[in-house]
Length: 165
Image (cartoon, rainbow, N blue to C red):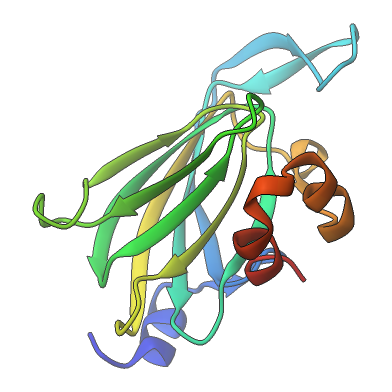
C-alpha cells in the first residue's frame, strides 16, 4: 500500500510521542510481579504487549529508552534503520528489512538502551511490529534530552544531533 494516510486510517493508528504512528494490538492478560525502573516497589505488569508502528521518510522516531527488551518485527513497506546507544557506550546500527541481504526481519533492542529509528534512505515508509516484555507502560518511557545524550555519548554526536528534538 503506497498511500500511508490510508494505512493510518485503516489500521486506526495514532501519532506517537517519539514520532511516527502506532496502535497497541495486544496486551497479554496474564501478569507478573516486577518493579518500576530503579524502584523496589513491586507492581503487577502484563507479561507482554505489542504495537504496530508506522514510520515515514520525512520523520523519525527520536532517541528514547524503556526499561524492558523491545523486539521489532518487519511488517511491510520499506526498511528501517534502528540506531542503538547501549549502556556500555557503544553505537550499533541495525537494519530491519525482510531481505536478508539488506537487514534482518527481527531486531532486539535490549532494556535500557537508547534507540531511535528512521526509514532507510531513499525509501518512503515502513510498518513494524514491536513487542515489549513485560508489557509496555508509559511510566517506563523516557525521551532523550539532546544535551544529556551528547555528554553521555560524546563519540556519537552526529547521530544524536540528527535523531533528537
